[in-house]
Length: 349
Ligand SMILES: Nc1ncnc2c1ncn2[C@@H]1O[C@H](COP(=O)(O)OP(=O)(O)OP(=O)(O)O)[C@@H](O)[C@H]1O
Ligand SMILES: [Mg+2]
Image 1: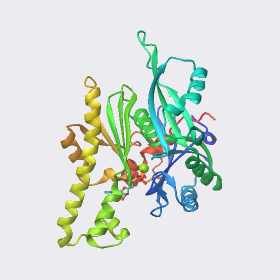
Image 2: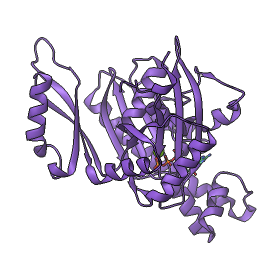
Image 3: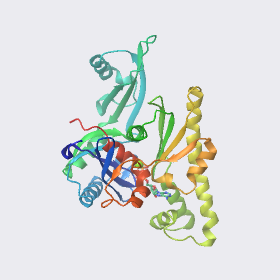
Image 4: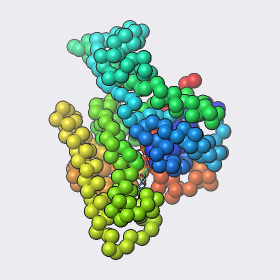
């Protein structure tokens, strides 16, 4: 069992909310120690960039206090235009040779100035007896964007020990909790972006971020009914009743937006199927707050022909039910997936 001091708290900073999760490895599985989320003021995080670090820092710190989390080691993830993930194919090399090659040649693979980015890579070891080449996953992230996150956390006396990418964290939590090696599409629909990650044979073969999300619904509701954002958000979530005369208009907004989301999902799946005709997808795994739109799951299932499931990363975990309410947990589980993926990383340092 991991010692408590070694735990990493996963901190997923989205454009709508900060999500925090703490897991502990037990004999066979995992135990959920702490979980929670706190909304951010609109505009404090945009396109994966911290626009208001003080506000975000305060929100993170308040969440840690409320959840009584004492460990200060945290893992975060990034997404958006400031991070580029690219699979490249290279001759097989040793780890050192690879390091040297990537440091000197990365410029040709990424559209950023090499001095402005942090580079990371992973050998996917796809070489075979006949093929002396291997796929390498290359990640480049803008230093200034990452540094803002690190500084914000340090200001709150937190110690960032892991910087991951949203899509990888999602892949990780799915693979560990499902213990499946089946080919799946992971789809996370947040407030301002949708992340699609198709996994085949245990590796990501297609990953993309698309700028659509549940905020679109709120904005359209606000515009079309001529009301404030906050009220529109409540209508969207069904927290306040809809006037009869607006019902049709609202249905139209939901239908149009969800249709657009599904088209994006289908585009990615079609591309995957065209390139991998012999590796059919088994299921589509939905996460993110936006995936909770009523009826969306069935709509995606009927449009893609795939079995669609709502991801609950905690389904098989031990949960202290005195501290964490099951009904609350089940309700927030889909949007906690990335935070859980950060918390489940082995703490090596
Ligand atoms: N039942 C629901 N129906 C529609 N939208 C919902 C529902 N529940 C939550 N949401 C929306 O989900 C969004 C929050 O989800 P999430 O926490 O995954 O986003 P985020 O990670 O902050 O955003 P992003 O990853 O896009 O930056 C909000 O826009 C919220 O209104
Ligand atoms: Mg998110």
